[in-house]
Length: 64
Image (cartoon, rainbow, N blue to C red):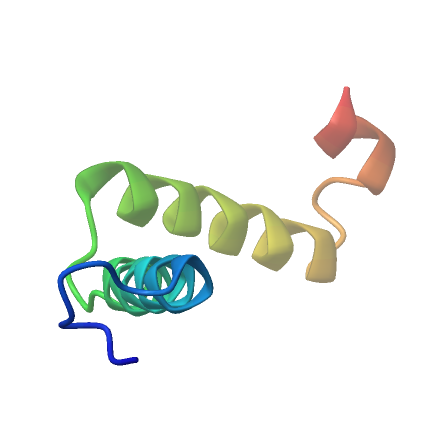
């Protein structure tokens, strides 16, 4: 019995829905467009990592 039958098998139907969900999730998560919020977070982390390497701040001050 195929998916396109009048009454498809429930297992096949659920399996197809899960496959569509996985594909949609992968496409959504792999967008190359960065939002402003993500860019701000990345800049914040990069700046603090640089300050830790230069010993301008320590890890305690970063967390506190």
